Image (cartoon, rainbow, N blue to C red; front, side, top):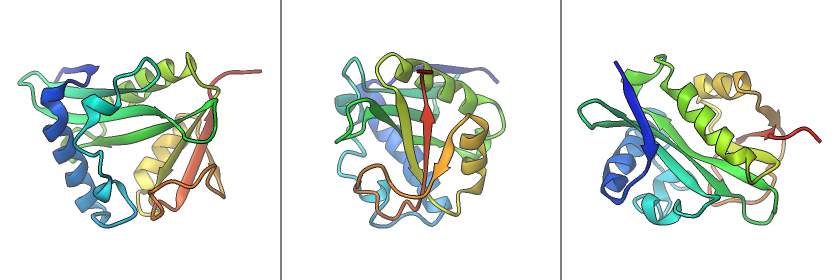
Length: 162
């Protein structure tokens, strides 16, 4: 199946929130300290609308959104962005759509940032393997304190050589 990747639009907000909540339930992450309680969860088109901060969705030919990924500035560190809210529905995992989303996000991030940070959960083993395959290195401590305090696994990737 072919998937179209495009920037998020206002009409996508509720469907993207549904994708994320579905994935969080799957991993038992439907609780405080994760994206589950993020007050901006349904406001993607408002939040990711600057030149530096973007969110992309993957949609099927019938228009159903099956995944997404965002790049947002990491508060407190000027040259670091955060890979945010990267989720794909179970039925599209293994199709290559996650790689396409990641490549678009990192290509964009390289224009504005030197490093990319992310947080995930210990039980999201497949996601961790995916991040490592994409060149992210696991780190022990968070770069900054975020509202996602339950996310106990962190990664960083250098986006440019110095």
